[in-house]
Image (cartoon, rainbow, N blue to C red; front, side):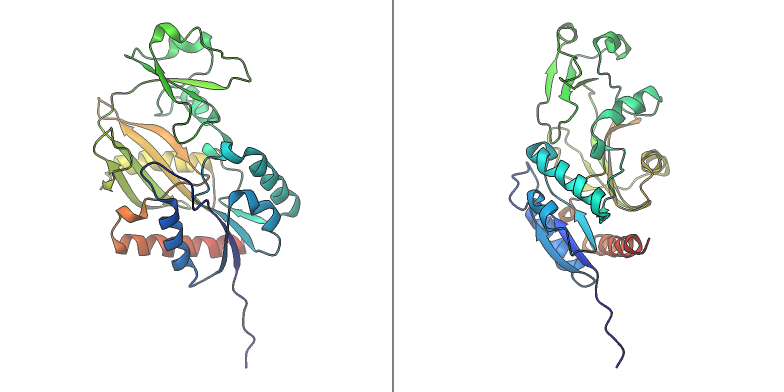
Length: 280
C-alpha cells in the first residue's frame, strides 16, 4: 500500500467577531474555510494568537483579520516571529499596498499614476486640485477610522509632524466605486457599488479591457507572486478610474455578492495558488 501523502496544514487567521460595517467577516471565512478543507488541514485563530500558534503549520493564511491598528503589538510580534522562523505567510509580508501602510498613495501620486492625489505635508497642499472639501485620514488608518472632511482653509493648520502621520486628498464627487479581485496575477471578478452612499451594497460588474488594464497596472506594481489583492477604484466625474486603495493584507472578498460558479472559480484559483506557494 503506497504511503499517504500528508495534506498541507494551514493556520487561517481571522477575527470572526469583528463588527465590520456592511460586511460579515464570520460568514465569509466560515464558508471559505469549509471549501478549502477539501485540500488542506485547517485551524482558525484570532490575529492576536497567530504568533504563538504558527509553529507546526506549513503556512499562515491571513484573511478577514480586521484593522491592524486594533492589535498593532500582536501584529508586529507576528511579523517578527514569521521572519525569524521562516514560516510562509499568505499574503507574503513584502506587499507594497495597504500591508505597508498608506505611503504607497504618496508614491503613486508622485509617480503620476491614476490615483486620487495625495499629500502629507502642508507645503504640498497647493499640488492638490480644487475641491469643495478634502479628506484627512491617518496614514495608519483602515476601515474609515479617523476619516474626516475639511475645507481647504483648515488644512494648513493641521499637524503634519512625522508622528501625526496624516494624509490629505480632495474629496472626489465620484459616480460609483468598483473593486477588482485578483488571485496572484489572475483577475477573478469585479463588483461595484452603484450608490456612492452605500459602499458595501455591491453588484457584479463587467469590466472593460481599459478597466482591467487599469487594475493590472497596480497588481503588477505590487510585485506579489502569490496572494489575494483587491484594487479599489472610483469612477471620477470625467469618466476615468482613480485608485482609492490597494488592499493586499486582508481584503474582504464579498463572495456573497457573486454567483456560485464565480465563487467556485475563486476557490479553485486560491487553492491552486496556495499549492504553488507552498512549493515555491
